[in-house]
Image (tube, rainbow, N blue to C red; front, side):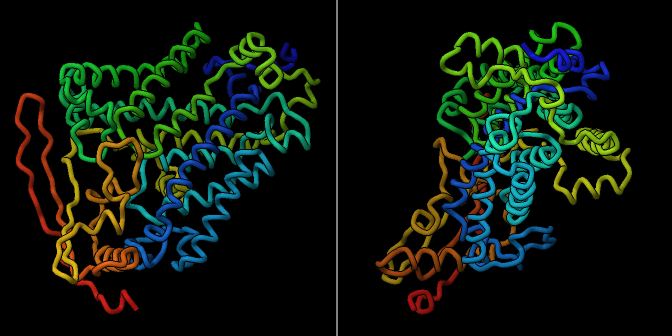
Length: 477
């Protein structure tokens, strides 16, 4: 059984002071650290295929092309070797974070690394990247390694952690749901309530997964699910803060959250956002559920999930116990959670701090109908043959309706400068093939306006973005 001291200072009712100033069980936060670490490592594995493409000056977005470069450790060098070294160092730090080794230092390093990574290539940054940056920043001030970590093996497990910052971490996913639902209604209104907007999203080139293609063939179901999405996104925050029927309300909120994210995962490509939100599920796990699971499966998981019973002085993490520090952090994190709704009413310096620390929430994706945009490329080889250079030079650029996310998916819509993409494709194609070299190639932007289910698809609009001559001799030397 949990220690009596913990039971006296724990409250899941957000309208009680003990909820914010007492103690919380450390197990959900340790599970969250592991889950988030796995998501981050998966993201790094995917990015490792295109390090030179997106992070070096030989890629499609060299540092000189950044109009307003933000601070980033990747801005110190654009050469391949230093960039790869930084990437490997960040991966090692992420492994340490996941395993809970020197966790606080690892968390700071991982936050610095991922913020730098996200800021280095703004055209491919997503809302999921912003959520990662915020969660890692919160993690500075939370004992994420109290259980199931190398730190816990060295120092002993801590059954409970101080409440203030962990509570803000728990409420971040709920705040995101509230803000995204609000943004959707402000941007598209009734198009979400039994309207065509989900159907329109499921006809965006490159953003749809196989289950989304099937769902897009049923406009009536799309209309129903669009309205249900808004209802669920508004209902989850209500259930999370409900002061009565707390355990059933949290259980229903968690099931809705998992169901919604799995639905998105199967139908749409939204970058890393869905994976991060699923990792956040661990933050909502109630100690009673973990205790029940340990009793139900005593041999399989009981030893790992059971509550700790150390005396209170040894069981409580010492991280963040200073009341002054807790008060300052509470103000900072409250401003972070409030800034999507009340940015105009906050002091100007607050907005600058939030922006500088990369704590601003980006919640605009899929709020309203978007045109479907894709690229087409045609090249001519030195022997006169016609070819498409992308499959050889940049195979990730053609993403279709498969399951895998692609860093290229946002570029047809967001990339507005092509002076580096042109020679990059020439160089990369001629490096990867031993046949006739690429002499020239053309990039075309193909756009189709969104259309409701009761109308025929509008004609596509084609616009030439780039005509590039390739210096064949230099590429082959």
